[in-house]
Length: 397
Image 1 (cartoon, one colour):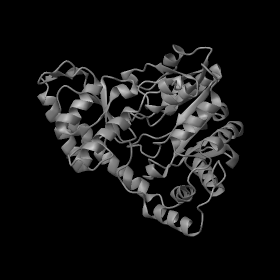
Image 2 (cartoon, helix red, strand yellow):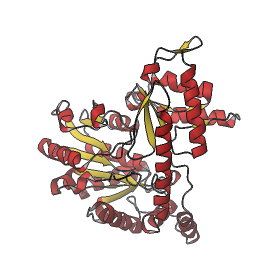
Image 3 (cartoon, one colour):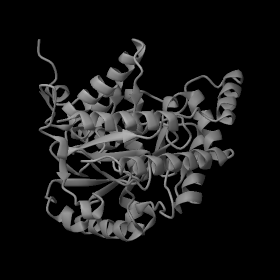
Image 4 (cartoon, helix red, strand yellow):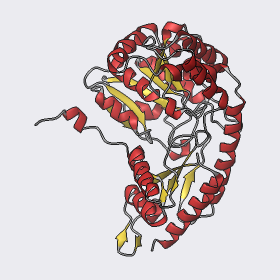
């Protein structure tokens, strides 16, 4: 029997593959330190959990409008105005089953067969696969270490074509943790205007930025940028609500209408209870966000200081999110016993097998010289895991 060629062209998520391997080892009683998962290790704040319970008791367990309940869409517009200086009406908002579904809806609504989306390397693993599922073509833009692997206009010019439909900006970035400046975003917005292409701005890590660095939404920079930008965000990272599966998107009324049609046939509305919980997340007390960010910053500082003590590696110092990209390419060609490490996937698998530490191979992000670790874990796990990483590296000969 023949299956869909489009489905066959999709690469499975290496992030989830490594996580699944680590989880299986844990189930077998192995002491695994997991640096692979992209989610906070904190529980959802109590006020949010309580609001979900109250919603269930009040019978708010039925279908809702496909684009989301009005109280949540109002809370989103208020958040975007308060935090990002962006004015949207509720008919410009769609609530989805996580930010992934936002992206899937966007590409399905925007792309015709063969149209191209510019994606900077390194990239989040799901971007190119969703572009391909929608019939588009991901075009990977090489970036420069000197610019912290953020693309510049001169980079984009090398890859623009008559088929280019959109560019993706992810700031703070997964996997590097880097953040685009206002000046960089202004230049990109002007380039998009000149080329008349869409901007897809993934801002899911917005609340997790450290030090004096600040988040700027590219949609806020000009009227033209506002019109051509699709803003994606959600409650998963900032409020430790990954399992609640609520993402949202702000765009033109016309694009949201198309996304509504698509979502109505794929999943209909997001979970009703999670929507009411998300209202509380966005409108309730925000101190837990700050507490979590402070803890992540402590872990970031510990991780990069510890990594600086390990020979034969380097790293990208993150400004946001909760990941560190570690360059391990100087170790390629070395061996443990008779087994040689030649790429990031082999490095990650051998690290898991020998030292019981789960990290994501950089090849998943288009960066085979690197592995990615997440510091969304306890300080104790972070210390133990990095000690094991150093031990693994010392064992390579």
